[in-house]
Structure formats: structure tokens, C-alpha cells
Image (cartoon, rainbow, N blue to C red; front, side, top):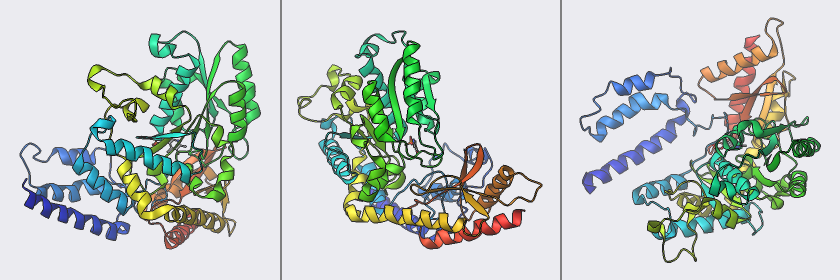
Length: 469
Ligand SMILES: *Cc1c(COP(=O)(O)O)cnc(C)c1O
């Protein structure tokens, strides 16, 4: 492709993006296609013969777009947000044009140094002390896998790294509400899924630390090795907060590695008024949150902070001859800070976002969502037809309809309500189970969600529910 054609196409795609954002509210938020529909349509195309971008774009619009769930719609209230923003998209375009492979400092010094710089600045923004060093991982799942691998090596004095497993049973603790990535990490890092001890939670879905200590003591009696504990700052189900400070004390007492999973809610720490909720965070060994969820930066960009970078690096570094460079002693080679060798230049989009919005812009963004979530919560329960099922700590509201017609149970009614809402295409919400109850989650966090979107959602939910029974 010559540069002239490429330039024309770039302009076309730029126009397409603007039109997409202009019209995004006209698409059904949740894709309405059936399984295999997209696959079969793509497979029917003449895929071997070279095609023009015109043809490919036309197929993209006809076949691919209907199979997209529009995460950037301001009416997306499902799962958790996956933000993007204009500065993030612009940086991502540059990243894909430069297409550097940023495995070590030498393969693009700017990538390594911007990663170090942006994560230092972000650390300051969220109030973590300077004793933490940051690295960008692809996802929080990876950060948690990295953390639990480091924990294992610390506990075994690097003998598992060198000689493989030693026949001892290493145990990990987290609450019953903790994210599935902890169990997944335990499977992969060799703890075994059955060695994840799920500690019961209290009425607010926070870990009961007395039961944590009890479980640790019981494990020691059984001859197991308590190795790591994972606190949640914002669980996936209801954004519950574990008592980080108390957990830190127990971790210290029993020599456990303490990782804090703040994948979604960590962004809220950019507001000084939210920091008291994370009391004790400075005592943790490892902390992760995702700017790719709720800080205007497109997927993937997960900020992982560790207190002891030497142990992290020792766990992951392998230096074959062809990867040795003259500056290894002076710089960060992030290939040693995690699983991958090859790395994308992810810091660029984070830097664009942080500079474009500034600290105050980022704070206003989070504050507005917190306000809108509170507003939704107050209004959904105002007439007594709905109840809240968990405290609204951040941007997530857990609720259900409570009027029954005597024919359907509340679980059934709320499941039907959720399906009916999503089939309208006007909003997208998802569910969880809290205390065995079918729970609808309403998450405010999309880049362009404003009060009018929340108002329209409130109206739609109330109307739809009243027609169900
Ligand atoms: C979303 C989420 C994760 C998983 O994040 P990924 O970056 O997709 O791996 C883990 N923990 C919590 C609490 C989450 O909300």
C-alpha cells in the first residue's frame, strides 16, 4: 500500500470512528447475535483472495459490527467499565504505527522509561508510598499470578524456581467473594485450586479476619505452609472492601505475602477522600488496579505495584546470552518483572491520558461516577419496589425487584427482568448472586455516561419491572 492510499484510508477510518461515537446509542448495547452466526458469515467470504479495504470495511460493518457488544456506549452498565478516551485512542494509533517490541530497555528506551515514570506519577496520584515500584501488566489476572508466584518463591527461598515442587502444601487465603483470577493463579502457580482457602465474609461481604487467623492456625496444625493472602479492595460481585489493615497485621504475624486486588476500585484512590477505605494499603507487598477498567485508558493496561522488586525480578529473570545488554545494571528491563518477554508499549496511552486530563480531570471523572451511582441507588429504592443488596462503596449498585405476584419467586422475577432489559438493547446490565439471592448489578463507569443516561435507565428498569408482574 502506498502512503497516499494509506493516508486516505486513515482519514476514512478517522471519520468512521467519529460517526461510530456519534451514533453509538442507536446500536443495541448487548450484541443480539446467536452462537456461530458471525463465524459462519465470515467463513462464507472469499478469504483467500486479496481484498480492498473498501470490501473489508463493508464486511466489517455488515458482519462484525452486529456481533459487537458496545462497551463504549454510555448505556453500558454491565460487568465493569472498560474505558477508552480520545487521548488513549490517539496514543494507541501511534503505538500500533511504531509497533515496537519493548522487551528490554534497549529495544526502546522510551518505553521502559515512560513506564517507570507514568507508574511513579500514578503511584503518587493514588497515594501509595514511594516504597512501591510499578510495572504495567496486561491484566489484573496476570498481576495476581505474578504476585502468587513471587509469594511461593519467597516462601520456598527460591527452591521451587530451581528444583520444582517440594512436596509441601502451600496455602493461599482470600475471601469467598474474591475474584476467580485468584483461584486461576493458584491452579497455574502450582498451589492447586484446593489450597485456596475461602474465608467467609460478613454482612457487608468483607472478609472476616478472625476467621482468617483461625484458618491459618488450623493449617499450621495440619502441617500446611500458609504462604499468601489476597485482600480485595472492591470485589467483583458487590465492590466490597476487605479490612486491609487487619489483614496486613495477620500477614505480618504469620509471614504471609499480602497481595491487594483492587482491579476496578483502585481508580477511586485517586480521590483523597476515598483513601481511608484502603487503610493499611502501604503495608501490602503487592497491589494491582486496572486503568483499563476505570481510568480512561483502553484495554490493556494494568498497574501492578510491588514493594520488593528484587524478589519479583529474581523470580522471573532468565538471562540467556542473546538478551544481555551493557546497561542491564542501570535500567529497568521489564521482561524480568513478569511472565512475557515481548511487551507492548502500553505506557504511551497512559501518559497521553494522564497529561491530557491532568490530575484534576481524572479526579472529576471518578467523582462524577461515584455521584451518579449514589443517585441511582437512592432513586431505584425510592418507591419501595426495589431493595439494595449491598453497600454502595463505589460505582456499583446491587439491587433487586421485590414485588412478587405470587406466581414467580423473586429470583425468577429478577432473572426475567434482566433478560427483558437486555433484550431491549437500550441498556446492558449483568447479575451476580449475593447471599444466594439473584442480584442485578448496575455499574456507572463508562467514559461518556451522564446523568441523562442514568435517568433513562432508572425509568426503563422501573417501567419494565412493573409490567412483569
Ligand atoms: C475485573 C477484575 C479482575 C480481573 O481483571 P483482568 O484485568 O480482566 O484480569 C480481578 N479482580 C477484580 C476484583 C476485578 O474486578
